[in-house]
Length: 158
Image (cartoon, rainbow, N blue to C red; front, side, top):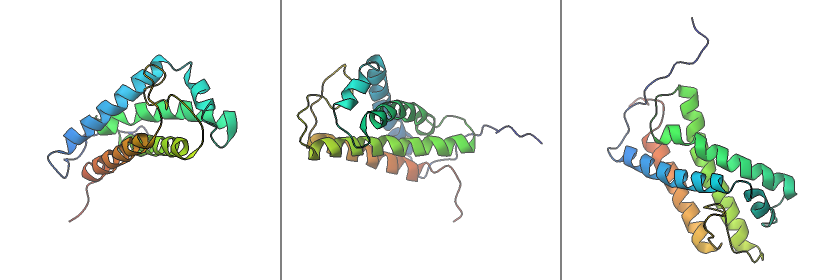
């Protein structure tokens, strides 16, 4: 008996295009994460300018959490051979990426802050916040939901 988790291959997806959707979502997240990591030292100052509820501590926590969940979402989306617990955690991280960006984009769209960068691509490329960012976040949520439904880690009975 071993107490260490055993890596297992993912089960076959429900649809034939599910791996493609997962790779597309992983590519988007990878572009976000790499751009954010290139300018990670400036990201806390950018998030401080959002005037998020919770203050400076929460915004600094959110910067770190965002990059961490973007990286940890990749094993599930790329169907990497990992343990079942890691696969569930990775799937949860893919949901958190969409949720955090939805929160930030809605906050900036509804607040009266005048900003020139939302931070989707860090401070490398400036993207002005607006309702388009809410739609992008909604698209991320759709990709997360679709990939979670179609690549659910546990085989269900029929």
